[in-house]
Image (cartoon, rainbow over all chains, first blue to last red; front, side):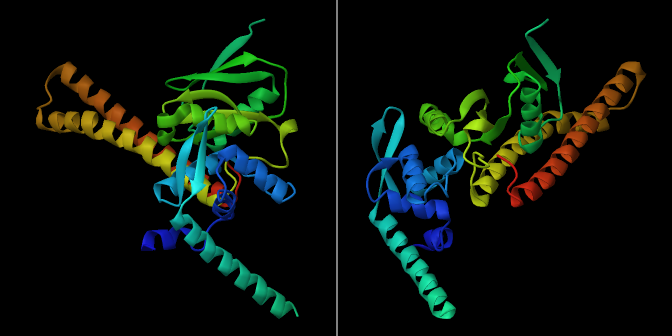
Length: 105
Length: 188
């Protein structure tokens, strides 16, 4: 993994994390917004400007790839590089959670 | 009674101040529908309502404008106006889930802000270097003789003064905006 990817995505923003998590299955921006809203019981509502910018940046960086278009909505899916970055982030969050639990007792 | 009106606001730069101004106009029953340079904001009479306006500056969106606007519409934001790479959207507060903005984290807010200020500043600096600086050099080299020459010099210094005022206001808005973005208050 090159230095740029590491610097930008490890650790990553909450928005980037949810995008990669949702794009393990093909989906479009609004589909991700809906899925995250359901997953977090309305706690997190991803905003369109943030979504558009994040998807463009992730596609440019090779973390997701464009599959096609459906009714003016661009469909994306995670790439191998994206999966590697997501895995690193999951391990980091698991470590955080484990440490928190241990300290809390 | 007229159903449209326009207001002259030459120093309103896209961002928090502009958004607050459009929100206020809408609450008073005037919906923004277009901007004509330099500084004219056009409104049409509407039912007074609490609506949030948000701006985005996105040169990349030109390549897939329909998909970009669709993303906003899907999330309930109506596309109101586009001027160059500046897009203006609005959403009624009653349709929002909490405090909605078009950017939901500081990173994307800062990126959008950077795009906007770089784009705007670049245009003004290019204009200054390409049009004003050569005239300044020529004026300095030319001997001042007669009223026409004096008039040209005065006009030139006035233009330079206007540019300097613009740069100072722009700088002030930039720093104010940066502070606001850090507090998570603005759309752009």
